[in-house]
Length: 265
Ligand code: HPA
Image (cartoon, rainbow, N blue to C red):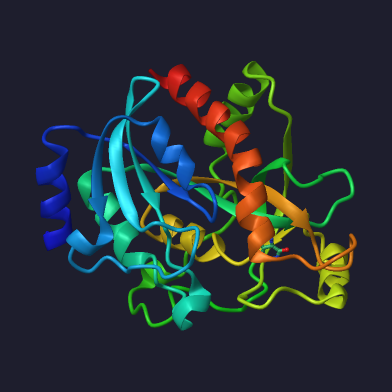
């Protein structure tokens, strides 16, 4: 067992979360909903990759939400930080070791659809790995040939959809396309992404989904729409806009997650 796993289990002091949430840029506020929070800064967990992206605080927080034990990972490492697609492998392996079976990923993304304005919430039903990077390159076992049909767990998606309806949050469904970043896309790339059938564009999540399937963790994922893709609206997309708009969709997402957990309890 990894030292980080031992340390987390010690700090959990008997709490046994099965569900983990990975919070994207600007979504760190969700941790504030956790009751009796146990804060674990990544710096205290040997081997955890510390992210340097502003808007990401870099800690695990465990506790209970809607009466269900959960753990949240605030401050994910991105591919664009070091060009390392497997940056999230270690944290996800540790989550698996502590007993997590289900992971809900969140991100901030640009919209490729007129009917999905900033502030909208989109549940990802499939993705396009446009970066061409794969976190399993170098893995030597046959487990590397991970199937990606229904990668986004259909029963979990259904439960989340029902939860959204119950709390009256309108939920879009769509395909997320991964560009490596950190530069934003050009208008031509955005037009191409639309032609390819994508609905939202972002710089994360796809490698984590691949890793979750590799580790046999059930996964679902949400995009908070913070802006229209480049060229679809006036002005440039910016990280400032992401940080400003994410909490708007984040509030809606929080309500959906709380209802989803309440339905499990
Ligand atoms: N492009 C890529 N990533 C993003 C965007 C975008 O427009 N908005 C938030 N994250």
